[in-house]
Length: 144
Image (cartoon, rainbow, N blue to C red; front, side, top):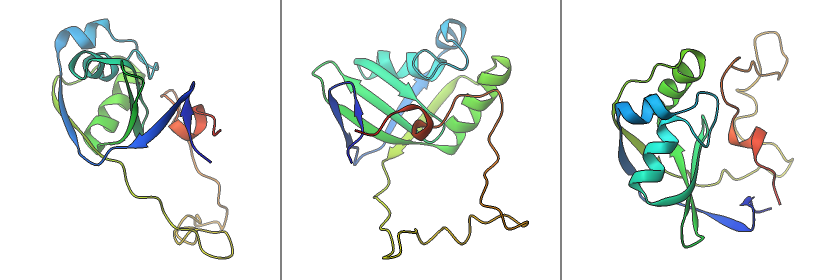
């Protein structure tokens, strides 16, 4: 199943990207909005993009020519977006987007190799969400 934004098929990026978030981006950005946060505004301006979606785990950049690229959101950017979503503060400076990770192969029984490590101490597989921050891309984008 391919993930799409509208009619645009998303391709994985094979190169990273460095961009700069300015004070103006922070002031004009909207916390808890993956399309209008400080990082999205900076990326839209610097990548000359039609749309940008900055999630905690991945970032999508839709170019004006209609192509879309998926990047892995770096740990420092992820942390800053969480802080920004909670109280509107963002540390200006340079941030990186990493190349999209290769897909993880599934085992024959339909579970990934990391499923045993996802069990919690009490034996449940339930994950604790981060309250009052933007969702992950898997919670927001529909698979087509």
